Length: 416
Ligand SMILES: Cc1ncc(COP(=O)(O)O)c(C=O)c1O
Picture 1: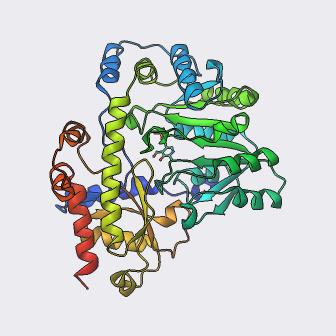
Picture 2: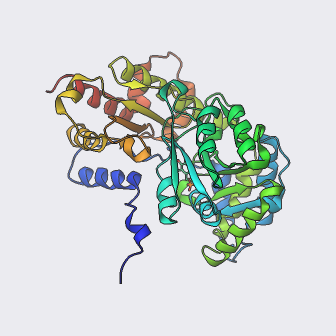
């Protein structure tokens, strides 16, 4: 029997592929610095883990939309953060926001608008569904984010229904979108529905929560969850919340969910209530400070060695362009994938090629995720560091980041 042609258009997620290759090299004894997979290094807060243990006996299938108390907690949380009155009946709990984004794409008869660069999975999801993706090029001067003008140019061209995914703070750039107000105005004018992927919103280094819902709540679906700010990626729980006028989309997703994943694991949902209802500011402040410190260290090391980057505003990613580096020019790489593979095998520094995020293949750009460190140790030790010497802190608390960066920089400079 043949495989569905839509699936043949898609390869295994690039993020997972680099992870597997890194593990393979590691098994062969090579030191690998894992700047590929974007996984939170921090442990899940203790009170949430305790709640999970307490609820391990929960064994029943739950409501397809999610446990009611959890939906109440999620709606309260987002009503405050997103400054709009959300109802618990318009919350959908799923096995990761990735699945919920997929199901939204599935139920909507629309083209997909994606800023280039964008997170690796949005476009493959569209391909699986035989949905047309329209890429909108963004620019370094705009910190790799969409502007109102960029959106309007595309909206003028076609009358088809449009679903736009906006992600801020962003994966792959780590930067926050400063054009939310103007995008909202254009989206409203052309009736574009937006998925605001806010999975990194709590990791904005400034501690502030900036959302397109502050300007266009009626046309925005918020996608989020516990994977990034709470370190619970492997728990597989994500959330989506809809304004009342878009509740028909949630109803359609509910039907699909009832015929596919049924409901998210019961103990995880009970534990998640704690994540949404308790105050985790101390944990979050520490996480943000740590991530900001590392991002500034790498930014400074890279840019002073001719790797061009834009300083991240949140999360744990950064885009790096290697096109000005002499050694890279000597290699005459045909594309960013070839460059990343060579750098991985020569230096052990694993990162993802920019082409996986929608950059043209020949742009020698990569994405790094600066998460290769012991998050528990960092939470305990970082805030008590008194005399601040960046190199000492890096060596002691973040040795793999320090050694990885140095391995890469040494290779770029010394060996020819
Ligand atoms: C931008 C973005 N959105 C969504 C996800 C999916 O998160 P999850 O399915 O774990 O909720 C990720 C994970 O890497 C991501 O980087």
